[in-house]
Image 1 (spheres, rainbow, N blue to C red):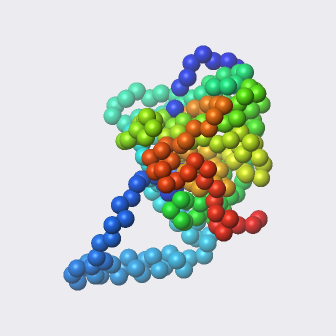
Image 2: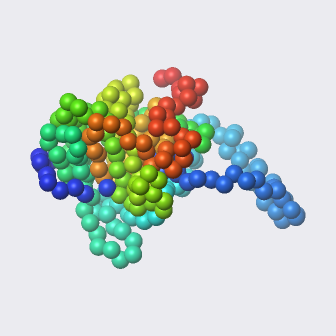
Image 3: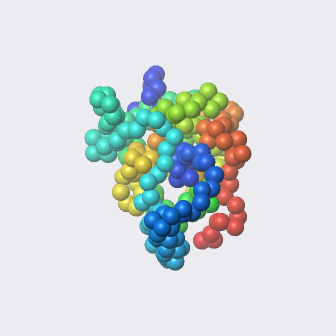
Length: 263
């Protein structure tokens, strides 16, 4: 059962923004015969990918290893609802904490979240690096279901999402990935924002944000934070980890109109 008040708190697809800063210095494509053969094979490989139908390309990209900025990795077991951390640490249950400017603070287990009304949607994912994945099938809960339960205070205007793993750097003093969106956007049905539990009909994999991730199809990927374990209602917006670490990327990150498809 979903419980009411609580007094305690739990935290390029690249990490839906949770990505890596790249070194773009170019190297000569080949220096000897062997390297030349490798270069040619790679060229043929990427030429083949470029010739794939969009559906096949989406299938391929969705199974690419997703990058992450977290130093610590973990495995989530959807059957038990337990987080299994590496390094011999004890297993711990997953909880989603919802607090901040709300009338009713919440702390939900994985089974609590599964008991909420769920919706299905197909939407595109647009990475900040320029590639897109079409027709990703998501299942999850609309943000309005959370709003109904916690009853945000009148002054609440934003939701700040937190992820649990510590990052290798601390931009702005944050040692974990954070991202924020306006409540107005999260509740706008045309924006199709979703707190996803399933992708392609299966529980999210660890690399794609298990157990819970934000999906914001009309924003670039770094806004769609993975591994969400806390949602904080605030008066002011919070610049995200990705923006703080890479100031060239703004807090507001709408997908360029030319990359959006009409449905």
